[in-house]
Image 1 (cartoon, rainbow, N blue to C red):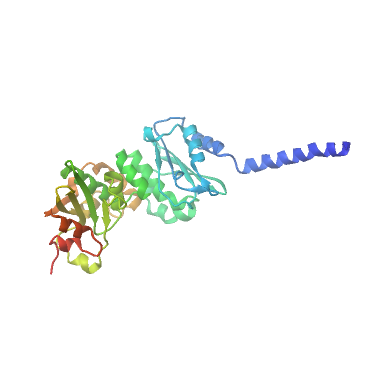
Image 2: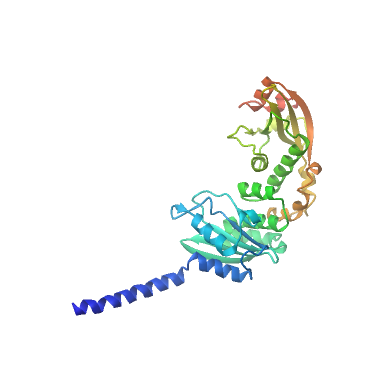
Length: 333
C-alpha cells in the first residue's frame, strides 16, 4: 500500500511536466494575443489598433469561435462601437484568423488556428501591398496566405479612413476590389439622386453581374431574400446588344399602393475609376487610391436612361428569363 502511495505523486509529477510541455508548445490564446500586442507595441484600447477576424463565422473543432473573439476583445479593447473591430465572411469550415494591425506603421500580427496557434508578423504598408512580387508568393509563403488579400485590403481601407458602411460592404464581400468599390459608389448615387418617398421601395436589378451586388446588400438593405435585389447574368450576345454605354444594371423605385414607379438604367465608368491609380497596380493596393473618391459617386456613376413603370413592366423587369434592357427599350437590333 505504501509503495502505491509513493508511485502516485510520481505519476502526477510526470503528468504535470507533460502538460507544461504541451502548454509551452501550444500556448493559450491569451498568451498569443499578449505577445502580439507586445510585438506591435500596442496598449489596450489604443485608437490606432485594429482587430480583424472571421471568428463570428467559422467553427473551431466543430464549435463556435465566439469564445476566442471574446478573449481578443477583452485583451485589446477593440469594439464594434469604436470602429476598430471588423469581421470578414468565410465558410464555417475555414481556418480561424485573427489579425492585430497597427495603423501608425501598418505592422500586423496574424494569428491562425491550425491545430495549434500559428503566429506571423507582416508589414502591410503601401510599399508591400503595391509589390507584385509580394503577391506572387504570399499564398505559399504564409500560413494565412489565402486570407492575406482580405486582411490587407480591409486593414488598408480602415487605415485610409474609408466610410464605415464601405467597410461593412467589404466584410460581406470578404475583400475590397474595384468591383466592390463600384457597387458602393452606385449605391450612394442611387440614395442621393433617387431618395424614397413614403410608400416607395427599391429594387435593384443587377445586370450585368459583378462584385457590386454585395455593396447594395450592405449599404441599401437590398437583398435577394427580401426581393430587393434581382441578379440576372447576361450572355455575351445579350451584352453586345445593349444600347447604353457602360451598362451596370437598373434601379426600380416602386409604390405598391399606387402601382406606379420609375426605372433607371445606370452606367458605371470603370475607365475613370482605373485612371485614379497607376497602371499595373495590384488589385489589393487600389484602395490606397480609390478611398479618397468614395464620397464622389457622380464622378463614376450616371443615369443612362429613365422611364416610367407600371405594374406589368415592373414585374417583367424582375421576372426570371426576361432581359431588362429589352423591356426598357435599350437594346440594338
